[in-house]
Length: 137
Image (tube, rainbow, N blue to C red; front, side, top):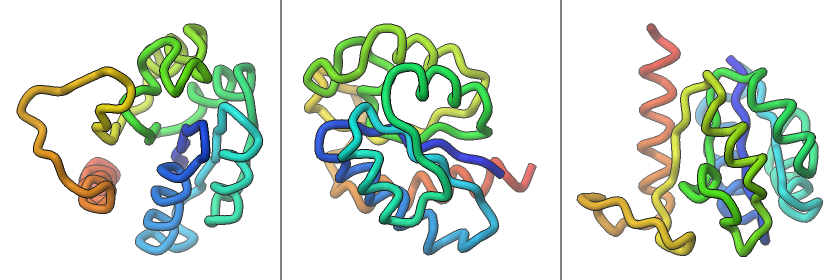
């Protein structure tokens, strides 16, 4: 199984996702860190990603070559992450046939009605459950 973790800005959410997925799945999954900037990519690589790439072309190219895409909900919204996520990136992520597992954060001016306000770690735990269940099919 191959997953992409997309993040930008400081890369903290991506780092947390990579750390938890690496701990849970050990070496049974291939994690690709896709950062909108080099800091985000670097943090995700240090957290245990197998590969990493930075920028618009890297994200557009790689999101069609994975089974799952994980990241904050803003990765499907053009100009989110304080403008780091371009419309081309958001479109490529949205159109990818990969299963998207998104962490609901309100910082991107997207509010999902009915979602409880929980610590990010709880959402990452739920993401692990989703990926585990989907990979068993």
